[in-house]
Length: 20
Image (cartoon, rainbow, N blue to C red; front, side, top):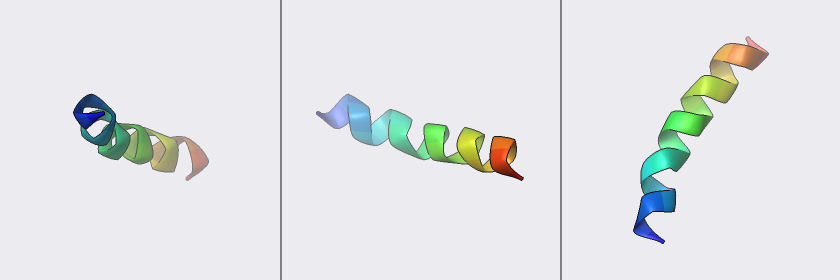
C-alpha cells in the first residue's frame, strides 16, 4: 500500500483547499 501513502498527502492538501 505504498501508493496510498503517496497520494494521501496530496488528497489531504486538496481537501484542505476545498474546506478553506
